[in-house]
Image 1 (cartoon, one colour):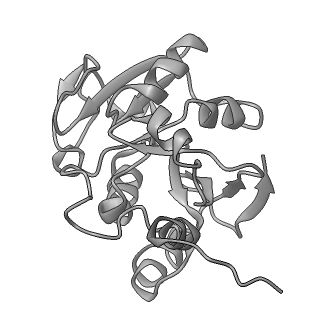
Image 2 (image 1 turned 180 degrees about the horizontal axis):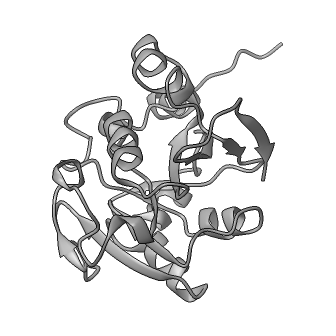
Length: 205
């Protein structure tokens, strides 16, 4: 049997390690999400009419939500090539920049190294009964700290696992990523609802 021969790129893709060196990591952890992630979500969820995209990046998710008829407030820590409604560090926010946090769901692909903090902040400032949608790696389910600080206290209501891989491209360079073979990382939408209590459901989309 012929031995498998690969290279460093193959190994990192297999491990899902798009951030295998700090040098290669984008400075503000900007990895754009393919808008198909929104299309898949809207097949199974109906978010509130006003959505706060709090780590909007290049606007890939925000633009698709607007195309689907949603009012979107877009913010991020810096402005790139997408016009934001305001520039602010989400972790320092207390309400939605264009109105009360009581009147919007929160949806984003958070910077992975601060994903737990983004979720806890979103759950803190979200209005009662509103939902928090986070696009995350499946490996986010792992870890003692995440279990202790997040999952044991605030379990998600639903986890929607993608049956086909969805790309997250460094600096929004989707074509380069496709040329390099796409993504081997598994993602899901993690959905919380403020005030909900129960055991999570896992679905596939």
